[in-house]
Amino acid sequence: MMPSDELRVIFLGGVGEIGKNMCVLECGDDIVVIDAGLKFPENDMLGIDIVIPDYSYLAENQDRIRGLVFTHGHEDHVGGLPYLLRDVQVPRIYATPLTLGFIRAKLSEWDTLAPVDSQTVQAGDVVHLGCFTIEFIQVNHSTPDAVGLGIETPAGIVVHTGDFKIDHTPVDGRVFDAARFTAYGDRGVLLLITDSTNAEKPGYVLSERTVGEKFRSIFSEAPGRVVVSTFASNIHRAQQVFDVSAQCGRKVCVDGRSMIRNVDVATELGYLKYDPGLRIDVGEVPGMDPRAVTILTTGSQGEPMSVLVRMSNDDHRYLTTEKDDTVILSATPIPGNEALIWRTVNNLYRQGARVIYSAIEAVHVSGHANQEELKLMLSMVRPKYVVPFHGEPRHQWQYTRLAKSMGYAEDRILILSDYDVLTISERGAAITEKIPGEPVFVDGEGVGDVGRAVLRDRRILSDDGIVFVAATIDDKTCTVADGPVIETRGFVHVQDSGDLLEQAMDLVGDVVEGARDDEDLDEIETRVKRALQKLFREQTGRRPMVIPVLFAVDAPSATGDRISFAEAADNDEE
Image (tube, rainbow, N blue to C red; front, top):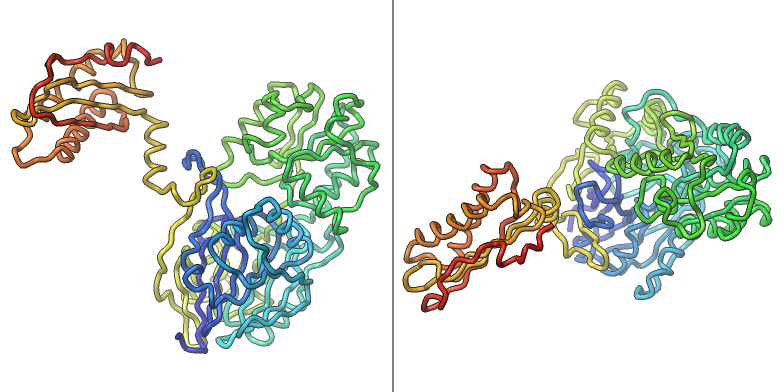
């Protein structure tokens, strides 16, 4: 067992990246987990739906877990929970009412999961989990009910900001609780774990209310329907869509599975307030005056099956893009989604819509603190050590620069990667080990059965295609008895590449006949593969996947003839 006055901090996700946030605090025999998020796939993760942390360490130590605490309800903080609960028994989860509402709605879609115990908490509440005492502290973010955490441990006090900004005029009236963060700073904080997403951006983030003001001018001037696409969990943004629509005489259609679910949850819990008569069903939209309609939906990240993307592709049952539509993308692009987003924007423009996004109009404000707010948090908490999280290496580096400008020595600013183990106490802090772990890819129903090698193969296939080679070898003479047959997909056009394929077939024969007596079929296949890869790279500049399949027989084939690709493939290459 580790010394009782030492704390181990392990991020299973969320450091050196944006997404799949999950932090493990370990002291004595007790473990507390903070958040259980997912990450959306990057462009080169072909076929992958989402990425989640590796839960192996928690599965191995689940008898020590005292609770799972959530800071807020965004997918990158709660979206991995169903996958976690498949592998790990969590005694209880703790979340604010709206966050817990989102979680319960999400878990209701997983009928294979056993029920999990939960407790609703409010900002200001305190819970005791083993040797940890945790206070929930009000912060501002782009979804309501977001909290930071003040955590008392035997090693010292830890403050976890969660995702935060400082909004003096929040939509829901719940102001950032600077007094509580300052109170912890007065007591002495060992470690601050802080949001670093906007460490590159100077100044302060604008208030969420400024978006509502911009909406009012756009809605009132729009000649037709207004379509607002934002994150489904951004209830503050949804509230302003309802408010401005009511002021401008527009009814609101909410569409998109996650948007409908979250709006319903927020409405039921009282976080989203509007006259029920203001909301209409999607089936009512086609028959209405376009100037009397607002559509609130998903698709701000260019998700292929989202409502906005289906509208842009003319692939929605009820909604098509119309010439006088005004489409507002009210969200910041998640890194890696830019190509999908601009494809959707271009399709909307082609169909005659006017598209407004944050680069040209102030239709979005961030939920994350800019530099001056990060400095303010650091000056309130005054920690001995600080760990920037929720940021890529460039954000971590900029946060380091910011902290150093405020007098922090570089050895007090701890830059971690996923699965690093930070051991910290009043005596010092150091990364002492790295637990085994790597990102887990979810592909359809498969969880973890697609690894980096499979993704590499998918990238090769998508870029340069595939070549199959089959031949029968005379086991006695080590010569080609039948074949080789070569077939390609996505590499070259057969009719235009006869010489290259003939060279390839000759090369297979040369490699086989040059094999040593002690080489087995696997070794010969490997040499065939390498020789063909070299040939194709030199002749075409491409690197297709080459799959050789060799068969050994005791005597030559009856025909002994070499089969051309055109005969074997029956000219079916398009």
